[in-house]
Structures are given as C-alpha cells and as structure tokens.
Image 1 (cartoon, rainbow, N blue to C red):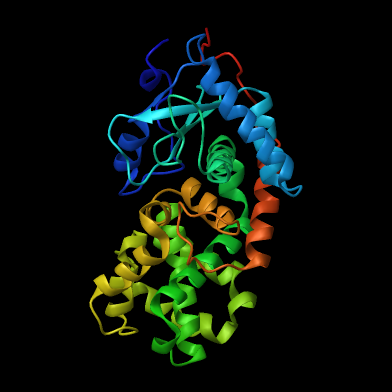
Image 2 (cartoon, rainbow, N blue to C red):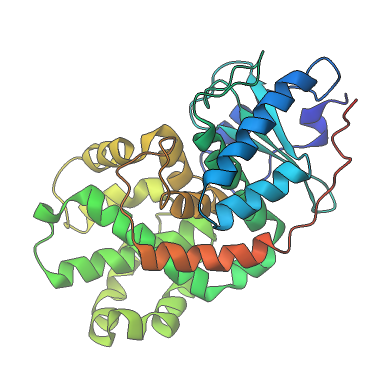
Length: 324
C-alpha cells in the first residue's frame, strides 16, 4: 500500500491555531488494510455496523453511514500514539472526491484484532462527524457564501458562550445582546478569516433585524476595541477587556473544556469543518465531544438540512485506497 500520509494530507477549511495539532494527530492514525489477512476483522465490524443501522430511526446519519458502508469507504485505523483530539481522519483526493473515512479503533472501542466494537453507535456517529467535515471541505466555496448557514452557526456559538459564562453572570438583555454581537464578530474573524471592516458591514447588513437596530448602532463602535483579536481562544479576554466579566480568562476556558471534552474543545477552536460537525453531531446521543453542550433543535436541524444538501453533492473515489 502507498504511503497514506503522502497520498492524503490532512485538509482544513482555513487556518487555525490548532491545525498543526489536528493534522499531526490525524496522521498518527494508520489504516488497517483490507487485505485477505484482515477480511475477517472487517466482516465482523461491517456486520455489527450494518445491524445497528437497521435499528436506527430513518435520518441523515443512517442514510449517509449506509452509503459509506455500501461503497466500502469506512476503514479502521490504529493510532501510533493515542490522540486526544481526533478520532476520525479523512481521505480526500486532489480532484475533490471522498476516498475514505478512517475510525480510530482505540478511542472508539474497536478491537483491531477482531473488529468487535463495544460502542458501535459511537462508531456510526464518528463516521458521520467525518462525513460532515468532508461535505464542508469539498464544497468550500459554496459554504463560504452561504449567509444563512453562517447566521445559524454564529448563533449557536453565542449560545455555547452563554452557557459557558453562566446565567448568573449575565444581568441584562443589553449585556446578552453585546455578547451576541461579539460572538458574531469572532465567528467571522476566526472561521472565515474576514477583515474587521468587512465584518462590521456584514453585521449592519445581515444582522440588524436579527439583533435590533438600537443595539447594532450602540455596539458597533465597541468592536473597534477588539479588532486585534482573531481567535475563538481570545473570547474570554474580549469579555474581560470590555468589562463584561471580571474574572480570569482561564475560568471561561475551563468551563468550555468541561462542557466539550478535548475533542469538542478542539472542534470549537479549530477550523470551520470541525465546528460545523460539532454543531450537528451534538444533537445526537454521543459521548466523544461532550454531553453538556447546549442544544437548540431549530438551529441544529436547520444547519443539518443545509449540510445535507452538500453531502448529496459529494463525489467518491472507490479505488484511491488500494485493497488487496
């Protein structure tokens, strides 16, 4: 088999502070080849995977996972050293096709010598997590231009921050609106790498009716004070600089970590493809990204509906990963 790491380099929507970590950990997951010596492992795993899908309700997770299984695009992997923040890696070709999704057998409770899993449901949701990432990455230009999607995602980010801050520290509707505008601002800065002036114009044009004209007019000048901040990781510092909170920035960061677990946290502070997957997968009963994430059916269902259209556009390469 060719060198998988040379053939399929990790891909991300845009740069982030943690891309190098995510890339390194993804490349630590080595594929278990589908050769004659390992066919029994895959027969067992695929059978368990398929049987669980039968029991699941009809939804996009079931449909997409079935499609990948039928196309023989789900692989098991063994991590060279146990990664903390990545449980699935993608195989994307240079001509923008999906060639495979590799599940880290160790973190997902799969015995790499038998193919038996003690959490096959987590394997299915991890597969869908990877599939969502693939849909975002393979439709990057359309995703970037989808304003409705960005409204949904920036609102979910706002709800995530609200829960991490805690309702006892937010004293007024005005304060909440300021946090919402700051969430929108940092969303565009971090995930889409937009410039300060352009983000202000987006907020005025697309969010005035959503938030309220009086709040937009009052708080847009406030954003001048934070234009040097570019990362989601900076959000606690922003709240302190603007005197919304008066505690250490580490308090909010720790609160986010407790809520999200390491993989969920890296999905928040990483690139957009990870964040979209976090928003959608957190509506399902999964453990690998954290179980205390706020849920909002309206936002998550609408986000999933949009991403499903991009999933339907994915093209596949069934031969890029050689199987002997």
